[in-house]
Length: 137
Image (tube, rainbow, N blue to C red; front, side, top):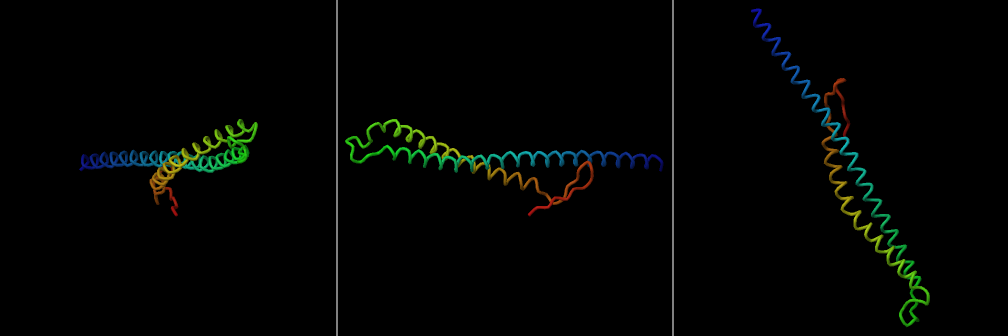
């Protein structure tokens, strides 16, 4: 009987140890999901900034470029407006590039952030300090 109790105590200790390791892995995965969510959410915000900024810069470049146009001039550009036209063209291309780069960055950030948010927001999980309840809306 005594050996049986010792064996049962050993089984309980092994089960508790295994459970503690599983809880630790769950906490680490929750922290990793939170870190990845924040990272991809920031990526989504950067993509949005590139899209909006690219549009503004592109429109500004177009306005600068059209300021150099003269329809009555033989080459279509007013006298001395070649530099202004070239500057507007370069700024317009830079804005278009920023806009184009912002689209996939925003899409990837949005999709990945949603994926990690779903991993992060479980209803109930165990931590070393006890049980934590996470509200998900």
